Image 1 (spheres, rainbow, N blue to C red):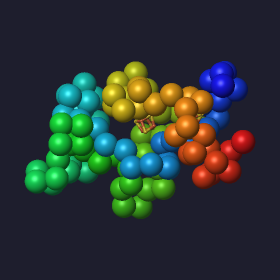
Image 2: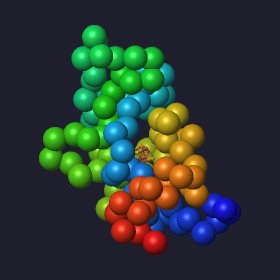
Image 3: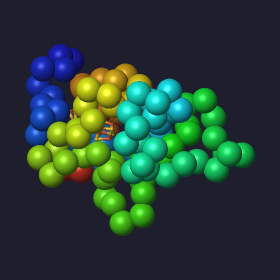
Length: 101
Ligand code: SF4
Ligand code: SF4
């Protein structure tokens, strides 16, 4: 199915639905990741899971998702966010979980 019908600008479901992790490479590109997320305990960290972006205490969504559902660090967002495809099965699952049609 075409991704054109999935409007990310009014959604942000994937930024509040699944666990989200950033790597050290992501944090080197975007220093706010180190400041505003939780460093994964060394014995649990992997190449792709160095910082926990979501869930975090007292937040219902990724720390970088703004009230307008846009990403505050879009240009330097983690690789996992870049790979996430609008219209993918995970996208559809996220939208369904949050009741977004
Ligand atoms: S859940 Fe899909 S449509 Fe919504 S922001 Fe994520 S990729 Fe875009
Ligand atoms: S960094 Fe941006 S794109 Fe990635 S989960 Fe957080 S708000 Fe969404």
